[in-house]
Length: 414
Image (cartoon, rainbow, N blue to C red; front, side):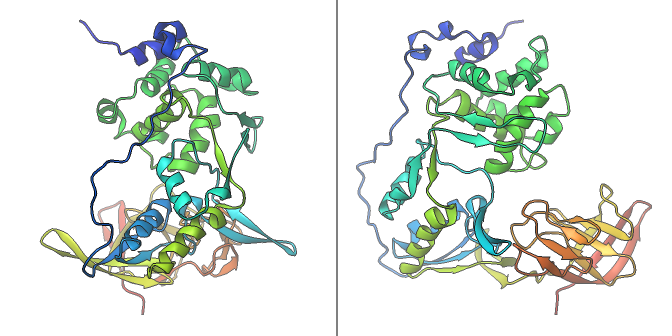
C-alpha cells in the first residue's frame, strides 16, 4: 500500500522546521499576499431602478447593503435581533447607576482583512482601529489567562512560541504517543478544501471531541474561538473549525497579529456602515421575523416579515427528549426550542429576543446564559438586555403518534 504525504502534512507530523527550507525558517517567513484590483472597468451605478432585500444585519449583511446602496440600488436591510451587527453587535447594560456598552464576545480584525480595511477607509473610519501589542482570553475556571502576542515566526515556530508562552501548556492534555492527537494536527496543518470537507463536514465539533481529543487544547483555543468567531460546537462542522485554525495558526504568517477598535464595535464598525446605508436611501429594520418566502420559477421574488415578534404560520413541533424540567414539556422544530407549562394553553419560545440564544429554566423562570436577560415563568421580561417578552404562541391541537413522539400544532398569533 502506498500513500502520498504533502509538505505541510510532513511538517505537521514531524514538527521539523528545517524540513521546509529557508522559506519556513526561524529567521525568514513568506510575506502575505496583497490584493491587486483588476483593470476591467464597469458602470458603477445603475441606470434603472432596482430594489433588493438583504436578510441579516451582521458584518456581511451590512457590507452587502452598503455596497449595493452606493451603487444606486434601493436596499431594505432586515435583522432578527434588536441590534445590528450579529457577532459584532453592541448594546447598553445597566450596572448600578452607570451604563456600559456590552459586546457579543471576543472580537478583533487581522491585517489580512483587506476588504474590511478598504470599506472602513471609504467611510473615513480607519482611525477607529489601533494595533494591539497583545490581547488576552479569560477563562471562568481551571486555566490562567492566555495572552496572545503577534508572532514574528512562521509555522511551525509560531506554534512553538505559543507553547512556550502559554501558562497553560502543561494542561493542554496533549499525548504525543496518541495517533488521534497527531491526527488533530494533521487535519489542521494539512487542510485541503475538498478532501477535508469530505472527511469532516458531516461531523459536528461537539461529537468529534468526544473521542480521544486533547481536552486542554479544546478548552483553551478551539472552544473560545469557535463560539466567538464561528458557531457553537453543537452546530459547527469539524471541517470549518479545521479551516479556521489552519488559516490563522498554520497557514498564515500574520495569523496572530491583531487590530482592535478604540471603542465598542457598534460605534466603531456597525454605526458607520448603517449611517452610510441610510444616507444612500436604504431602510434598516431590526427585531424582524421572516414569515414567508415567495418563489417563482425557482427564484425568490418576495417575502413577508413581522417587526417585533413572531407571527408563525402553522408549524409542527416534536417533543425534545434531551430536555426536561418539573412541570415543563419541551418541544423543538428544526432550529428553535419551545416549552409548554403543565395545563397551559400557550407555548413559550425559548429563543431570547435579544441575540437569539436559548434561554434556560431556573427558579425565577428563564435565564439567557449568553447575556443575562431574565424572564418569569410566563415569559415576561424581568431584566434586559432583551427589550421584550419571550414569544407566546397558542396551542390549537395536540396529537400523539406512536409511543415516543408527541407533537403540538401552533397557529398564527392574533
